Length: 361
Image 1 (cartoon, rainbow, N blue to C red):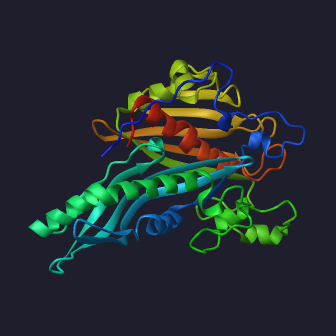
Image 2: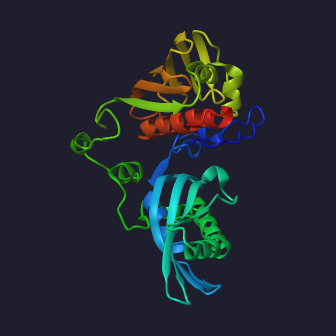
Image 3: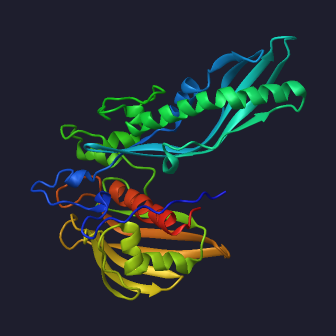
C-alpha cells in the first residue's frame, strides 16, 4: 500500500539542496561534505526494537502482560554520513509479540502489536499501531484492551527513542567515527563500506586494487570508467516521470534549486549547474538520452545516461536508467564518484519526484 508523502517546502532560488550542491574548494577533498558513507541499519533496528519495546512487562487490571520480542520486521533502514552531518532513512513494518496471563485463573493468551509504517517522513509523530489478539475469547479481548490502553503508550515512547537514536547515527552512534565503530549487532562493515571508509593512509598496491571488485556495480575498481544500472517504480504514467525530469519548473520544484531544462534536445543544467550536459534524444514517455556530468569531474569528461520507460499496466511505471562511462575518480582523485552518483539518482532525484508529485511506489 502506498503511503502519501508530503511535498517538502521549496527553498529560495539560489539556495538549492545542499546534497547536490558542490562548493568550490582548493584541494577538492570532500567537497561540501558531498562524499557519502552509508551504513545499513536494519539489523541494528531489529535489536533496538527488541531492547526498547520487545521486553516491556507490567500488571494491570488483574492481568500480567509482557512483550515477547520482535516477531517480524521488514523494510529498510540506513544511515548516510557526511562530515558534520548525518542523514538517516527508514521505512519499517514491525510486529511485537505479547503474552497476557489472567491472574485469577492463570490462563495465558497471546497476540501481536503491529506497527505497519514506521518511517522517517513521519518522525516525531504518533505512528499507527494495532493490537492483534490470536484468539477471540473473553480473555483475549480483556488482554487486548489492556495492551491497547497501557502497553501502546509505552511502546510509542520506545519507537520515539529509536527514531532519536537513529537520527544521531544509529549503528555508528552520535559523532562516532564510522571507520572505528561496529554496528550494534557486532558485525564488521561490509566490503563496500570498507572501501568507502578507507583513510588516506590506507594505500593499496595496483595488484590489490585489480583483485578488489564491487559486486554491486558492473566493473572492477581497476577500470577507468563504470556503468550504473538502476530500475525504479512509480505509480503514475511514463509521461508524468518524463515531465518531472524534463520540465524546468518541475525540476526546480523537486530539486529545490535553480535548473535550466527543456523537453527537447539541447543543453541542460540542474542543481544550480552542478549537474549539466546535453540532451541528445527525447521521446516523451519512452526515452531520454543525455551526455551528463558533475561539475567536479575531470574537465571534458561526460557520462552517457539513457532512461527508458515501461508500463506493464496503466499507472504502473518502471524507469530503467543506464549510465555508462562514469569516471572512477573526480578531478581531485576522490574515489567516490560511483557511490555519490548512484545515491544521488536514487535519493535526490527519483525519491524526491515520488515525494513531491505523489508518485510513490
